[in-house]
Length: 427
Image 1 (cartoon, rainbow, N blue to C red):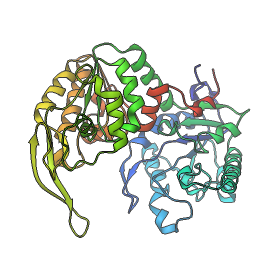
Image 2: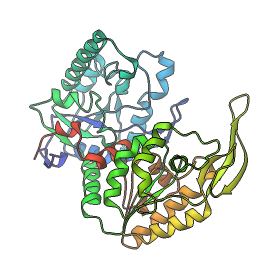
Image 3: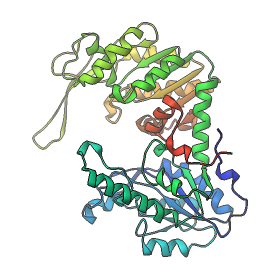
Image 4: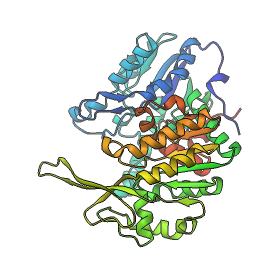
């Protein structure tokens, strides 16, 4: 069922306060709070500008980083939304206000005072104790669970009182159960609830990728945790002609095949998943690297990273060495396959790209994908670190689509259903 979007709201929104859940969780220096990459701010601008142009008073909400409710002020200081609001002001070329709290008298007064066409950013949603569900791994008591549920419901009501319309334009958080994406729209039943332009575009692009892609279709899967991506991989295997494996996941496959992986740390659960579900596909749809760059990696007494000898190997990894990138033979093979494909989907770096000396594989994959669009094909990058890499190499514009959500991208490909989207009004 198609969902209503901001396009379906009245052309004149003067006098309306619009609560918009953006994903302004930008990459930042967690010690200073300085913004390292503002791509998510830029992605929010089309919806924000549309609402402002229609005369709405926009109340922008987002989380930022991983602050802990109850932390001393100085520990949470880098995660305040002040720099985000300032960067939004720069792009809009007009002031963006910033509230000192999420809810409460000060926030409510600032919202009430908003004029048509103005924007106010609430403080980091995760500063509030009840924005996120309790962590079940901490084994909360029944009393704690009941108290937290009541707190989340109260928080949702307090937020709902701030707005006349709810907009979810935070694709990267659609899989979450936070108040701002689930309980809040539930509390706003009877008021318009729509998705923003970013979410609309993300869903349309992924649906088209899964339903109307031209063969041959190739996927590149990197990263570390197989358990986080096993369902995603299974969906891909039902769609693609070839699945190229890279990153730390490579060494889980090797270990599952009985090959020595040196100092690589392998999760037994991941190894078992590969052995049970994926080994039969090797040589059919799944392709593993034939060589890999390995290095001696350690820390000195001060915890500083120390990188020793590096070498390219095939077969078993020597004792004391860890895999850090795909090798030159593998990169050449993968790049040729990618360039010859009509549709390519990529999720997960194929090496430790943050270290320049170990970035050749990830850069090479990105450069190969850039050639797909030029040849009339489709190249889709699945958010997270993969999107950061593509932006780092200046290749975003050469891709057909670069998702803003890593986990959300995976989850939507898996089952194309979010509880958060069910709260949005149908067309």
